[in-house]
Length: 274
Ligand code: ADP
Ligand code: MG
Image 1 (spheres, rainbow, N blue to C red):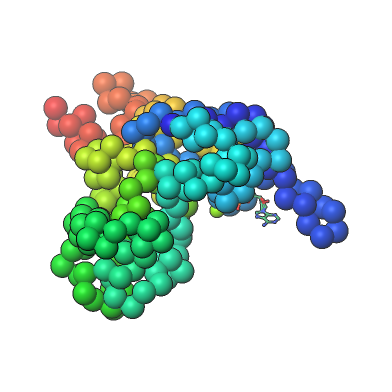
Image 2: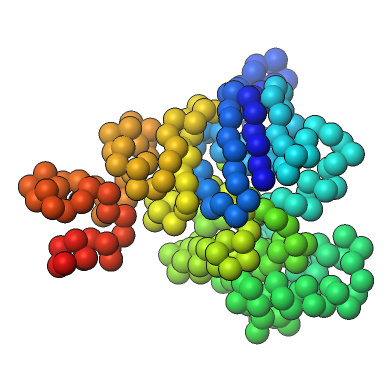
């Protein structure tokens, strides 16, 4: 679904200072895959994500979305319809004063017939479990609920891929949990391809694949179990290791029958009390 080839992105500022935010990256993402991107602040995650629906264009290399090149201006509409973006602050993404009007905004702009808009809005609100809030004012909702409305607004445009740039960063733990459950459901039940950027290791654990970035490059990549075993590398990159994995690695030194690659509390309980 996504093919990133030798992608470099350079920002050039007024005084001709150049920042290479993405440095010769190669990434392929399959349709239906759930990929999490991790990395410290400034490692280039947001810059990379903006290439996925042509908000930014490559300084070098190319980005293909289902074989459509983001540099081909005539394909912009197609690409933006296939890849929906969700950002950190839900308040910046909600425009209408009623939830269902907000969700309808995208499909209205796509020129969809009113009766179909109605269907899409209802369906999208049900998918994010916010249907009963359809006639409420968004400002009365919690952060997690608002972020789910923002996601519904994107889903109503029927994208194939959802790119989420730290969508849980401004939420409290229960809001984060709601949003993650929604994202997992869209991936597992609707088959949406997910590219999720986060700082939270417990979110990364849910992915099929984790990509760790530093200074615009991929430094680690693999299944969560394998990536989180690289405790020293992750610490050098100023990233946290899931505490349960760190505990498993420590226990494994004394109790070799406890596996090192434990990611969740349930797995730890099973290992300790077989
Ligand atoms: P992340 O999302 O991982 O925090 P970013 O992609 O936002 O990283 O930033 C990567 C690098 O590019 C940083 O050094 C940042 O300062 C720089 N950068 C980001 N946006 C701009 C911009 N609009 N102009 C100039 N430099 C930028
Ligand atoms: Mg960012």
